[in-house]
Length: 328
Image 1 (cartoon, rainbow, N blue to C red):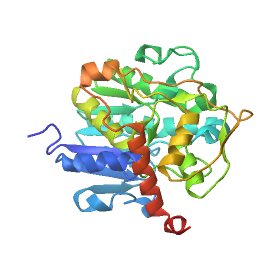
Image 2 (image 1 turned 45 degrees about the vertical axis):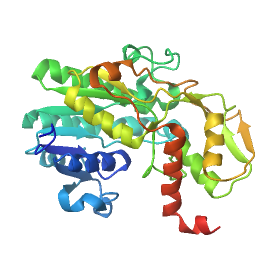
Image 3 (image 1 turned 120 degrees about the horizontal axis):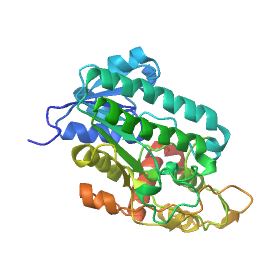
Image 4 (image 1 turned 180 degrees about the horizontal axis):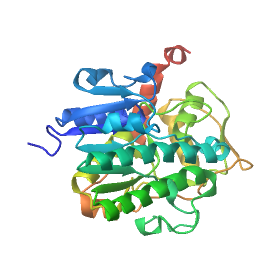
């Protein structure tokens, strides 16, 4: 019998991009899953394949009563509900991003403490790291300096979530696990033009036929992208085998420039486009790459999906959601 078999597991935000993949994997592993959604209209978004096997709740997790209802009777809580966005969105909403993420987190972790859950997952982010961090970046630099300014609202919120996780471990003896995932992408990602991250933004524009394709910055900034199924595996591995409240990077050892990323997206979309760079636009973190050593040592975790393969699957999924674009 596996670790998750028969366990009662709450996945906050389980109807979302990352959460839905985690829920599906947990159902496969035999867990008894509860998922939360913020509205009735999105209760089963991305969860049709497993809706018969899960319990769902709708509400605002920032409301302590809602959080208590969701956590009641659970053995493990995976807190994935978050307000996130791309570079421009983060620049324009640092206060509300900080407020909304921290408010829901505070309600959920306190409900988990009161319920005496066995394990609690804090899903942090590589956004906690400062602009001048080492590359690849080790976990020890998570609280060095200030988070990268272009995502400081989200970065500070995630730092505070990590701090509270450690504090609850120290004061209340809770078993807390902390992960710092790197730039996630894959099927079910957010393709909204006002708030998407770089990969869905590029895919959307290439598939619709933008030519030239304008890319922010000079193309030299780098990222370490994490495919969503690897993300889900990493989270569950951290809960199974991670040490209490010690942050663990979850990411790929592939560091790629944004310029090269744009070229691969065009190639995998079968589009011939001219790529033009706009150095007047913000680029965010100049370099971001994951030190994967701790995840390998403690969790036995390595990514399985290489970037080109993951982009191919993501483009295929996006096109399937956009039949009119395929016809054009």
